[in-house]
Length: 251
Image (tube, rainbow, N blue to C red; front, side, top):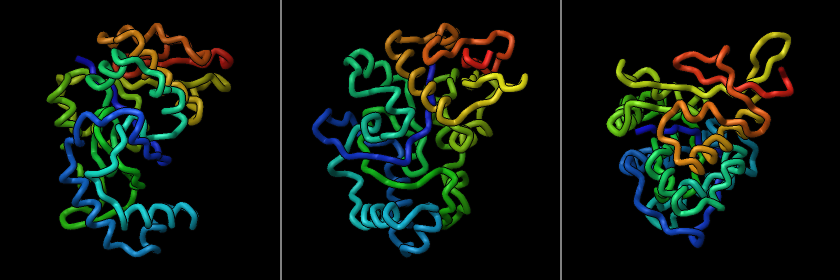
């Protein structure tokens, strides 16, 4: 049974009216540990870690000071607002598509570890590469260790990677030889070289999640027929661990 992994988005919203959450995140105890550490940091320390402007820092410091990770929760798939999620358009999914994603889609997160689409979340700001340290760990990669990869592999031996390198590198080192790990690459040919443009790749990742949900895809080979946003699968550029889709304008 395939598992699809995607990155979160920095921009988040609260929407407790659209749909009830199905459950709490699996790693909520770890999130509470991280929240406790974040609440001990000063405004300047948090702003430096986030690398953001004052307005964003002020909003997120206030969130951390008042955060309750067990109340007023939004289903994860509706909480994130980045480009990838705009193109996924979860707000118009039917129940069968949501059921498919609840089973197959996992959102990686620096704060929550790994989320199912209908897990309840509250807005936070903590990227996986954020320089947070605590007892026994010098980075979030160390904090999470093999937990996320172990959980994924307990669910499936076939992982489709639609996440950025920042997030997928928390999974890759811990995969067993039996696990099939396939990365989708959305690129275009520039001077004979395959180049991945960040914004277009985010759009395509979101569109791919939608494509898979609409077709209830369970065999990873079936994603090769994806042809949205002017992308076409390239047999020539692909291999057993990379499915390459080329933007048709660049051919």
